[in-house]
Length: 336
Image (cartoon, rainbow, N blue to C red; front, side, top):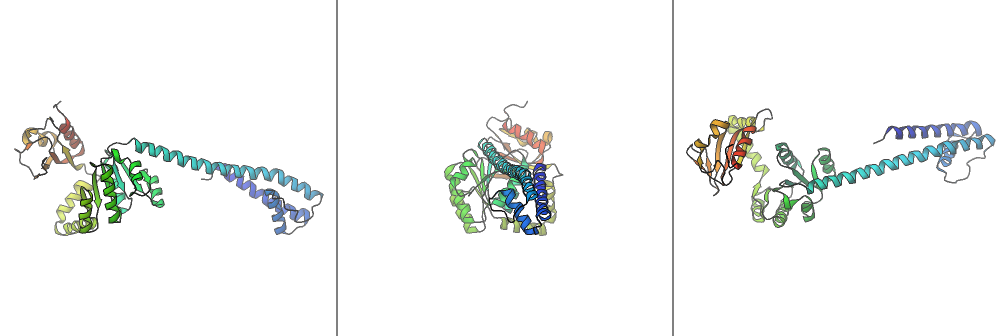
């Protein structure tokens, strides 16, 4: 970005070129092109011979051009060189700072690909606020967008192990691969599973065949945007009120309602108590929509006498601050 001193020096140089050209025209009766050429070779000191013979005043004028013009040229060249070096240095230091921050992350999520789906996924995770996200992308235009958006990112090919290692896969809680190519998503899934066997992987698929291959490669969940989009459109038509409620309750930023999943730890105060005894509905004003048992069984709309056990995951609907309180109860070993 040009600063005031750069603009000033540039205007001064143009002024000297203008004065030099018309000076030779007036003093030596040269045509404008020859006068301009003479001014340029004088300022740049290329060592060419004089374009036309110089008289006494022409030589004095040339000395003036050399003294004042050369100083301006050198200052301008130095300023632009400094600007380029500072810009490159700033990029290097900024990149190093970014990579050091990524190295310090723990329990974060890696997103492979920042296309239309990847951008929505990354933004959603970042808006959640509790989990850091690192994006792997190799498109230079998209990298600029990531930088402007303040995202943590690794420039490179997500199918390469080195990129995953630089993204901190060894300490990540999950990986989401949403590239346009199903083959690349399969390869990324295999690589990620090999680098960290216990990582949770969500992969994008465009066909049932690819979905099967992604699951075989080690993906925990496979999502087809086309399938989900189609179902969503159908639900809007068939059950408009239900669809409106879901949008209203879960996607409207002005509404405090949110769905949360709360794991129940060993020796938690919620362990081995019924829903009624837990007081979740009465004290926290939360609705327990479902309970996922440790066995994987899902209990929808559980009864008040349903017993909560360690290893269960509670699916609750309510205000975010109350969900946070329930999460503490799920971890806590004492009521206080």
